[in-house]
Structures are given as C-alpha cells and as structure tokens.
Image (cartoon, rainbow, N blue to C red):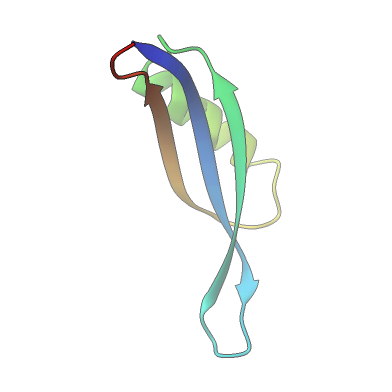
Length: 67
C-alpha cells in the first residue's frame, strides 16, 4: 500500500574546494495520484523561483510491505 509520495528537486548551488558540484535538495509532499506531467510542471514553476539551476527532479513513493 502506498503510504506517501514526495517530490524532490535538486539544485546545484556551487562547487566544493575540490571542484565537485555542491547540491541542495528541496522536498515537497505531494498527492499520491499526481501525474508525471503535472509534477514536471510544478518542478519547472518552483525552479523558476530559485537562483540556482535545477539539475534533477525525483518522485519518491513509500510503500508499506506486509502488515
């Protein structure tokens, strides 16, 4: 059974001293029945409000296995 769903946006906020990318995540609780296209639209709208570039969009669904 699906317990919860989250939308995670990953932004590149800079680089480390070693020159590797530095990322920051923002996570939002979403309705389990949200469609992929609606989540992409929301992610793009939220990204437009940020100064850092959006590099990844993830959907995390948590399921309960067994009882």
